[in-house]
Structures are given as C-alpha cells and as structure tokens.
Image 1 (cartoon, helix red, strand yellow):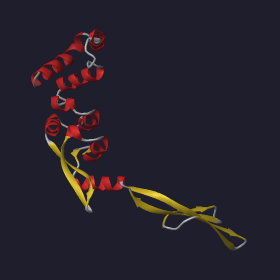
Image 2: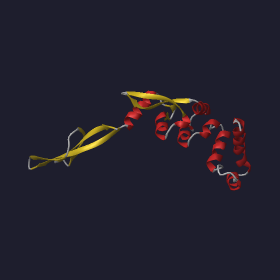
Image 3: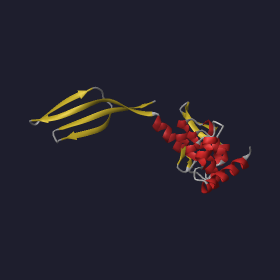
Image 4: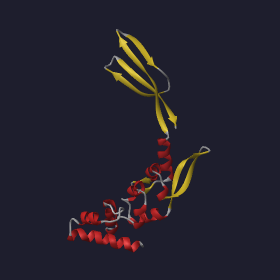
Length: 182
C-alpha cells in the first residue's frame, strides 16, 4: 500500500457522505478488521481533504494532535524527518538530541510543538526549565495590629517572600517560599 492508496481512499470518503450521509456508520458496522474505527475513517477523510499527510497518520496521537493544524507539507517533513529536542541537562548544559517524531514522548511533544510548528531550542529550554522548577511553601508570618500594638505569629520557615496579603487594614499575612529545582 503506497501513498496513492491512502489518497484514493481518502478522496472516496470525502465524496461518499454526499451520496450516503450514514456511510461511516455503515462501514463501521460491516468492518471485519478491528483497526477500522471512526478515528481511522476520519483520518482517511482528512487525507482526502488534504488536511492530513499520509505519513503523519501513523504517528502517535499525542504527536499527531500537535501537527493537525500545520500545512500538509510541514506535517510530512516532520513525520519523515528528525526534530531537534532539548531532552534535559548534562554537565550543566542543555542536551539536544535529534529524534523522529514517532519517538517523542508526551512531554517532549508538548515542549517541541507550538501553534506555529516546531519551537526553537531557546523556547524549548525555557519550557523545560519552567517544568523543572517547583515552588515549596516554607511557612507564613501573620501580623496583627490591636490597640496600636503589632503582634506577629510565624508558622515555620524563611525564604523568598511570595505574597503579602493585607486584610481589613489591621492584619497582614506574608508567605515565604523557596524555588526548588527538580
């Protein structure tokens, strides 16, 4: 089965609903192969409408969903080529690896693909660094003013001040946090 088979089948699926609006249901009822599903038929239809590259049809769903809005030529290029992926840090430097789209895991696909296609390495690094940082709450310090006197209550820790909440003009709460690299 070559690319032309998929294009022909897709073109037929585009034309068939005009003649029979229930054709998808009929095909699914009569299908003897378990791989023929509604999603597969929709993929063929998208191929027939020139919205989906044949080569992209075989990518994992988490990658295919990122490519669906791109032009067919770009989908093909990505599906058959390799993509630069920032995979992490080694020896304090970001590590870049070229990978086929079919080998991207979910987090890599989310990091690599943006609304306009493949993100730059600097964009991937920024996303990776954001994913690797977690905020750890270290405690709160509450100040209360009563009869002109300031009272304080600390519930653990010190660190960077994340937020200060002023309540009703007579009390304030300060939250201390630490940014932790995962």
